[in-house]
Amino acid sequence: MKTVITYGTYDMLHYGHIRLLERAKKLGDYLIVGVTSEDFDRSRGKINVQQSLMERVEALNATGLADQIIIEEYTGQKIDDIRRYNVDIFAIGSDWEGKFDYLKEFCDVVYLERTQGISSTDLRAKNQGIRLGIVGSGKPTVVAKYINECSYINGLVISGIFTDGEDIKLLDASQENVASGGAESVNSHSKTLKKSDLPVKNSYRELLEDCSAVYIASYPSEHFEQIKYALEQGKHVLCESPLALSKKEVEDLFELAAKKELVLVEAIKTAYSMAYDRLLLLIKSGMIGDVLSIESTCTSLAEMQNENILKGWNSINTWGPTALLPVFQILGTDYIDCRIVTKLTDPNHNVDAYTKVSFIYKRSTADIKVGLGMKSEGDLIISGTKGYIYVPAPWWKTDYFEVRFEHSENNKRYFYQLDGEGIRFELVDFVKLINTGYSNNYISHKTSAEIANILNIHHDKRRAILLG
Ligand code: CTP
Image (cartoon, rainbow, N blue to C red):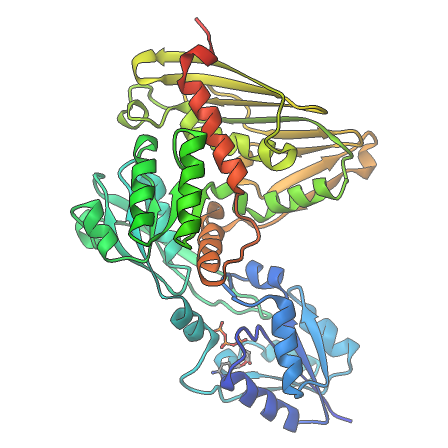
């Protein structure tokens, strides 16, 4: 009996896939098809696969062409599989010509002519077709990162940008498939684009006329009106945190979005880091027992007279949402008491050099420290009854963390590649939410509303303790 093996993602199964499988099957008597897992695809840079692993396997099964379906989970697995299943022929499309010659040591390698004119990438692009407008007067460097990351998401094009900023430094990403053992990697280099190279719009209104979704990175005081206007115009919204300056405003915005059947998502990139996501799952699984304390610190030194700070991006607005994220996502928003201590350098503009927020919950406590005029260790410590999780600085770009126990021989270390600081996955999730109404990691409405509430309390000086 001759065994043939082939691999692929098989997203939105199409005619090109079927033709390849038919020809592969004819090469022998028994066909094994390897379907890539979500994690493996992510790690090799294929990020916006539309269907889940389950859906892809089911679609493949329904063709009746595969005698056996296996899951491909890691680089180098092909050699393992060929040995394990006694494979005679490895078959793959001609787009991979030469890339799998290293397998000739183990079996025959056959490249089959790729079917012209169809691919999952094209199907995804047709399906999505999202035109994203960008409002970027408040955070030029963040906006530059988003523009760069948009180039990784097929089906998402930038329809225009409205910003007061000067030249925006763009990282021009070139996505190349560097195949080695089935792995793809992504290369990037930077270049500076002038404002005139971008589809710049003269007003917010003009920007909204020509887009289906908008990304807002203006000033916190502008967010509410800009989101409201975008939703009223029928546009989906991704907005830098905070969505608004009070809980009520945030709740009103979510209500409006639901009424209009539109997506409204708060942009906190850390929420989309795979390591951070895994950390939450480990805690939910009870690995460190009951969580009794969370300490989260985010600081970055800045010139306190900076225009951006004076216009609203003070310490608590800049760092508060990120620092609060693990607190609300792990302990929820039903705390008993919250105390805010802040050191103001410019009370007229509500500029804080340093702010500390302490929460008391029924069974636990949490403390966040943020500052643009103070430097500290930017780590995250989540302590439980069985052990604790330590995320080293800068924890908000989580790619690595440790689970530590009383006996250090039980400690565990976790590492997950973080591409694009989480922004790439945030955009993928935003697109997925628009197209399917479903996403894994996005931030709950309660969390968004409570973040705005804390910033509101800070703003209301009667409710915060001022340091001299
Ligand atoms: N394939 C093919 N003809 C096509 C598309 C894919 O023969 N038009 C083959 C590929 O060469 C591979 C298999 O089908 O052997 C699975 O490919 P996969 O990467 O899942 O499909 P693509 O459509 O190429 O996906 P993408 O656009 O995401 O790269």
